[in-house]
Image 1 (cartoon, rainbow, N blue to C red):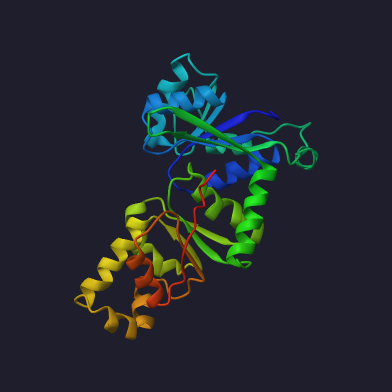
Image 2 (cartoon, one colour):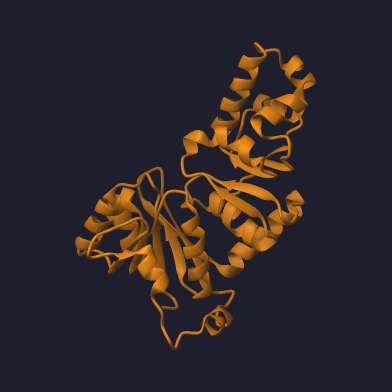
Length: 278
């Protein structure tokens, strides 16, 4: 219902985008639980945000049922994308569920800029849980600002590969693609991102400093630390990495200057952007 909050406890997979878009059209805020969350952490996020519906998968189902049955939250309905039990809904059952009097066009038209779009659940360094609520207007303002600052184009390719619970991943592979018609490929296992890049050859790619450092290490190992030789052969190096078509590359946190300099020398336009700042 309008004004409710829907929770997703999922790995990075296409169905998330379907669920999240549907929620946005209904003025339902979307909360994502980190895949690494414990049942207690998920229970806290779901309780504080008031979620009544949770979309999950078998990987997290036992913990999700524990949260629902704890009696400390408003959670009532669990949709399990790849199975479940007699107390949950399957993905197919959800798709086939119809309401004769429901009109999606009317529901979407009723959404206002002040309606909540997403609720980001984080834990501060002192262990205190924190909810950050963002409206449609908040997110649109960020999306427009990023397009102007980074000169983002239409129809680009991007990879969704990090936990969608964070605002950075939501901005980069959910909201920017929706606004500007990007093509998004999901990679459910962050551990294989290096192997996925040559298959997708993204035009927009973001990663934490550690990822850029690891990829730099692999290049330096290939050339025995000879950065100049790597730069001289940069076209082949970037093609092997799957980065030769990148138009905008982001390191979304402070990064050692020598790492940034290394990638720029290879022709990767690495930008330092605090995308997740509130």
